[in-house]
Length: 185
Ligand code: SAM
Image 1: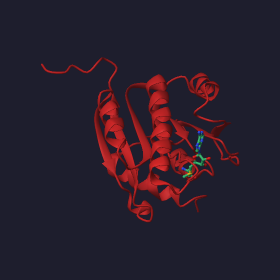
Image 2: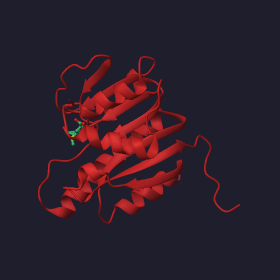
Image 3: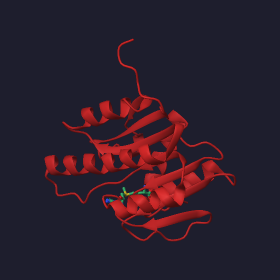
């Protein structure tokens, strides 16, 4: 079994988008307790590698490296870049502590998603992919637009496994562009 029900969300994202391929190097942000790490390490197989980061301690998983740290902290982001070098996939299931006040929770969620996006821009190879959780709200559109400038395309997916929290969606950005996007012709 998996450590978290969240594992089934990554499985569904993978079924719809093929986000994690055998041999990939994967960075998983907000990884505790480790359900996504378990799924990701199965998907990458022996030739791949997985690095998980969280504020919380993550119990050992065979073949998975972890960092305990805060992704809003520059030192943690630098450690991720240093440890992983280049990656094929960045995943983020990071979520803020909920206040129950929607605008605050939304804003904090978008802020965490942007940390994941920034990290992805630093570590992803050309052609790499990013999947990031965000609570829907007024700032989601601009995040998506900013992601669209850096990737071939972005899809918004509501996994069935997260039906209970209906405001949660995943932006899945495929094929990181290494050359600037040309606007117009
Ligand atoms: N994907 C995980 C799994 O499958 O087990 C579940 C992740 S849980 C929904 C969200 C996680 O984001 C929490 O463990 C929380 O500690 C982490 N998180 C929130 N803010 C963070 C931050 N600034 N830096 C690192 N992790 C953070």
